[in-house]
Image (cartoon, rainbow, N blue to C red):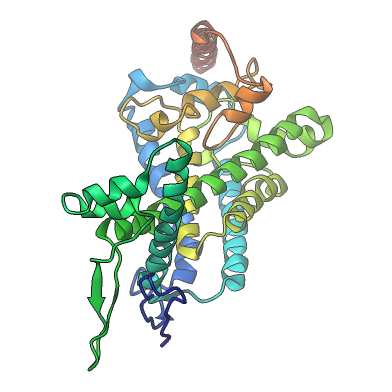
Length: 371
């Protein structure tokens, strides 16, 4: 147990704390193994969901491609796709294992102390307010004095974080009164600690992953050897479908997806549990981007413009040099001029018609041979 006090007497003392090893999210599965299994489970749950929709043809009006296109245009069999995806997920599990082994044990018990530290920073930051208002010609001290009775908290803020009426008695026989935090300071501190900092970490991780994948992905298309040797395998799926999202050459899959996600996790200084959420979210987003449907009720397709319809353009022969951004946002495509512009409806219609004609011709040939 640790007891902490502040050296400045007008600041509230920091609470004592005792750290213990954090319990697992699931009582029956250690977090270490959850980090290995969760992204793969999420990948297949979402993939199976879209596969059922695809197989039963539940929403034909939202298809980006017809079943005829899937049968005629794709150059990889379902078996080949499944085999390579499972191999890629073995590699991902290995990376999760390595990252898990390098992570320190996770502890709990310091949350109230950490919130109090941020509340102290909020209190200290208020000391600059009178000087800042003075630059604008506002006498903060005078206003604070006039509001001391009617609005004591606001007066305290204007006085530079001076709240003489906020005290609390310490536990013990002496019962010494010490300064206390205002409720609003604690609420701000909790928002910073529990919301703003984790949100910023996710923003950093997403930006890092998007940056890593954009430039490597674009390089794979600009370098003929890299494209022919590695990336061309992924583009054997001209008509993407959900569980083909990770259909890649093993080396490319490791470099582009697995290593990129691992680096983003480390760069953002995420906790293992944040990492689990980030990897699950990335897996679901990748599957959704390859699902082959523009579903109006799919939230992932509306949070950003980088969705299934956007990425599908990249899989077409006429759009292969555009829309490199993945898996979250499109800012690199926008900044570097690689975003597709123009109507695609006629191009998609021609592809559908051509695939249907091909299948009808093949069916006619088979019928004639049978006769």
